[in-house]
Image (tube, rainbow, N blue to C red; front, top):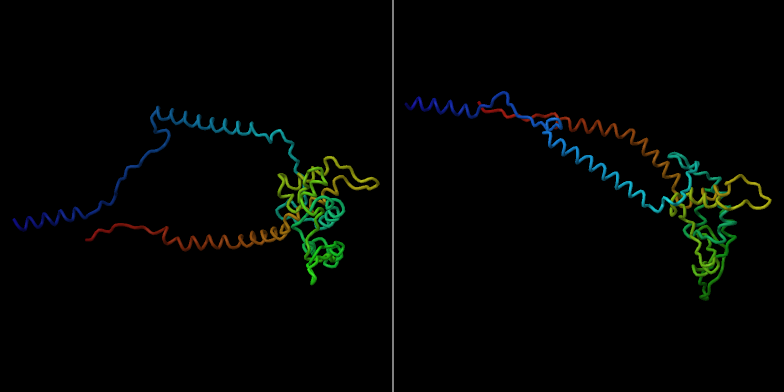
Length: 273
């Protein structure tokens, strides 16, 4: 009896530890075709109502916009608008001359210094001559008094008015905006400024210029003033794209090589014999 009991226990132990070679696991069928008719109708109705509600909300949102009644400026083909296009530096030089002779009578550019023009539109000697034409109030001196001196490269562009109140008095209560970042501050950028300049202004008497040439140069100058790093940013972007074209495949190969061991390993239960 003892021998029979031992044989029976040993056999039952092997039966408990043994694992069948093939395990059948039920698979859940989550397809739309396998759903009952009632659920199909409910899901279809829910989808139609959701899509209709989203479309109605979008249509109402667009219809109540007050900006739809405004005339937006057209998109002009600027030479610097391309992803790899640089600014026209000759146009920047001409645009500065227009600002200096016309726009600076009312508008300031308090965030732009004379030194910013060096190497962009003028040489250093040219900018020094331009800066020396401006009288800058400096001081105090050893006697505690303020004095005027010729401008230098480190000075900023002069302001047409000493304070905002004087600017409003000279312009019938309107404050002329600063033009340092006017291109970024207006919706449409240089398209807006160009449309504003060419919308009503006639060319000077006795001067023959192409239509929009002066406005185009001014807008190019203002784009550079708002983004002096424009050309450098695009050059850096091109270098990053070229570097990424080399590094991304290498990183992808390294990722596949390092993770291939973990992704391809299999964990299986091996019962003791």
